Image (tube, rainbow, N blue to C red; front, side, top):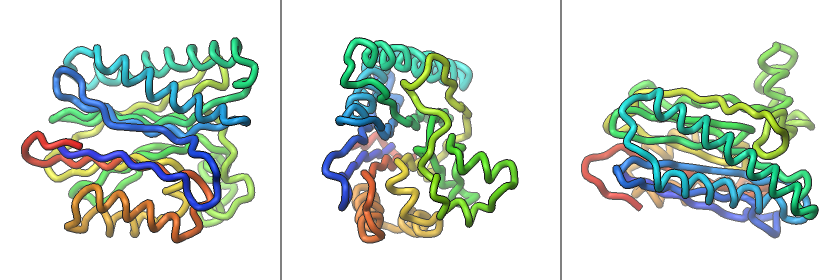
Length: 249
């Protein structure tokens, strides 16, 4: 597999509160993460950085996953552990009160892909069926879409588009959506913060993913395009491609 994580502050924000990465455990499986922090006085940066660091530490000690159920249980358990530690940090550090973060994370093996998310950072998979968003936004506007109160087109320009109804580190009990799908040769995983998904259409993503460019070039081109389209937010992306060999970045 090949993988790349890139992040960019964007053209408007002065500070990048996104964090992420792709981490390989002792068994050669990969954990990909994008976290988009929120909260005043850079507390969102603390929340997203803690989330990525804690999960990476857990991943380093993880066992080999024989089944999808094992990988789903791992993500649920350790995301809940991170939630508790974020809450405790905010309780003992008043400057971090109210901090939180989105998370989209995927366990990638040579047989399947297990993806978990909280918030509006997204996961997409490109395979023989095309490009599909496999996560569900936990946002106020998406709830309006799901209940038929507004259309998806209206949602793109709704004034409360960025209001989340679920985030990591903001309440005692939070549940990640978790699902497993097949992951096969030539499939591509895309994880991103809303700084990317708000600025690129799915057709633009598809055109870039299916280009013949190097993986890093494709990821950088998506970031550049998001900046060209306004770049009002931090922009982060993981691209992971199932290819022959064990080349990784």
